[in-house]
Length: 104
Image 1 (cartoon, one colour):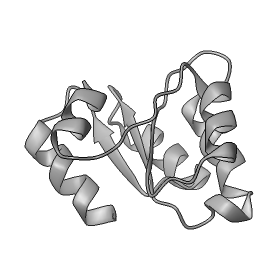
Image 2 (cartoon, rainbow, N blue to C red):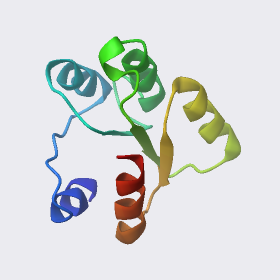
Image 3 (tube, rainbow, N blue to C red):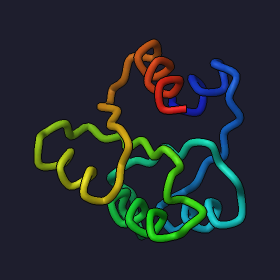
C-alpha cells in the first residue's frame, strides 16, 4: 500500500524484500527518503536504521519507520536508532503524503 500511495503522489519507489535487501539497495542507490517497516525478516527496521545511520551517505537522509506498534517504547527504540518519523499502520494516505512532504 505504501508503494501504491507514494507512486500516486508522484514519487519513484524502490522496494526491498527485507532489511538486508534494503541495506544493499540503499548502498548502491541514492535516495531522498527511506521508509522501512520495523518488523521484517533477516534484519528488522531498527537494525537497518542503525546500519544506515553509521554510513556517511545516510546520516542526514530522512528515515520514516512504519509499524502497527505505536507505543512509547517502540517509538523510543526508533528514535534511538535514528528514525526521523513514525507512520502507524494502517495509515491514512493523506497523512502519509503530508508526512513525506514535511520530511523532504
